Length: 209
Image 1 (cartoon, rainbow, N blue to C red):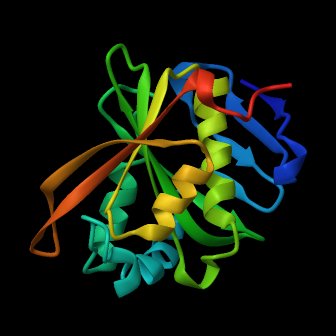
Image 2 (image 1 turned 180 degrees about the vertical axis):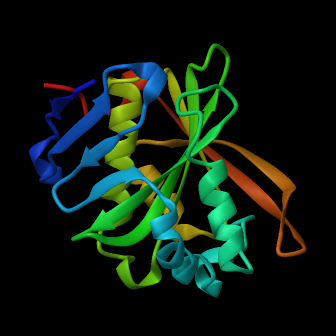
């Protein structure tokens, strides 16, 4: 079945346009392709395993993350397990972030209830490509897709209180702090705090024209 193309109108201040393609048969979401001004965001494949392993094993990346791959095989298993069940409640689905065909990061979507009306997102950018606005651009693209096309009600994001860059990104997009869970995540053998941010569909600035 042929895909369809939709265009999001993004405020001029961001200088971003988003094109989103998906299979019109929602039971077979085989192709999700989100384009922003500089990035292409699409499902990761086994062909991306080596690139993902390269940045996911850097200390500055896994410092704030629960997933610390030790081998390429672990990355391949991660890809297999996180690219099925798109838009199914309870599942994580992982998208790759690409700049000029180079994988520079990934962003995951956790579909949650009630009635699959909410999502949690998590994002990772290769250290070489950080502080260039790619993280913010990719989050705008994915969150716009979730609100405007999948009609989600609420989106959350979880971050370490010490991850000031991630906090700044979320706050710049209108996410608000909703809760702090003390020593609730075990990361690299240490119990860490978890700071929760959220935003509602009616609060999201980037709407379809």
